[in-house]
Length: 145
Image (cartoon, rainbow, N blue to C red; front, side):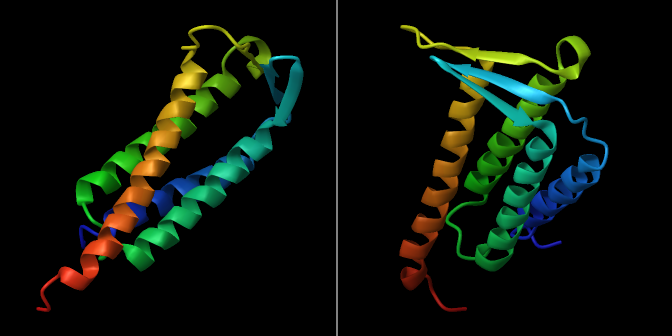
């Protein structure tokens, strides 16, 4: 197995797993309270959207795997992205009767687990963009073998 294709394989497996779990997803919603707004996200969407994102990353790693700057940055991106999805599923399925409420009220210090997961996800996506841009900028300077 080529080391450049392993993140693509893992993202592809995650996408297929999420699509498989979509068949058994309950119809209850995840309630988000943000300031004075009340959002309800249906649980099937919590499976379909990450599956589509994992499939997109699978394709991106297959196409751009050799030009990425660092293998370690790819692993950081993979870990932070999948940790975010796992945290979202835990949040969505914990609590009474499988549904839960996440309160995101503005405070001086906001450090709820959901917000920390969201920050980790944003950092993971920034790492992927930096990995891709760094590889594209370094590509003209590589020696031809």
